[in-house]
Amino acid sequence: MKGLKRLIMVCVSVFFIASSIRAENREKVELIFSHAIGQANGSNETLQISRWAGKDYTSNLWGAGVRYYPKERFFFEIIFMSLFQNEYTGIYYYNLSNTDPARIADFKKIRLTANHGYSLKDNLNIFFGFGGVFGRGLMLASNTAHPTSHFWNDSYFSWDLRTGVEYRLTERLKIGVGLNYETEDKIEFIQDKTTTPETISLNNLRISLETALSLSF
Image (cartoon, rainbow, N blue to C red):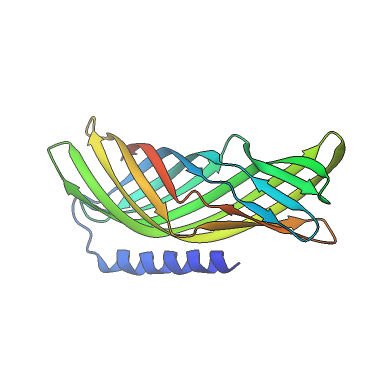
């Protein structure tokens, strides 16, 4: 809930910034499709009645969103990203005995940023941006010898810094590559549907490499 409140604050701030910028003749809207990949280190934890042995994991997120340009080189971007492949994250030792492999089964996030671009060449631009990310996820742990699954839910908010370069292929089509940096270093998954809930802290994918394709209207 705290993360959602922060995202609402970011949205309100972006709205007031947008209201203060006088639109020019080159005002436009773009659809954007992206893929982000990042890696995080595993962590080991001794919990209340169990133990967590984390492993390094890589995450692939696919997304789609909208860009709004109130001015030629200034734009707002909101993008929805989702995990399309389960990510193995570690081993959950239930009661310190049962060995249950764990995976992130579902993860989604919304990113809202304000960005400014600069021209490097005729068709090549560089941009810098700042904003916020709100994410939610579900992690599962189960074993054939211990069929009862363990569930962990999470939600988090992080400030986001980003930069990238874009190349214009045609008047309406651009491709780009960039880096995102999230300030939040941990994502806490809180166990659900149990009388003794335990919290597992995964290292966040703070740095991710993102490729994008955008189409303007």
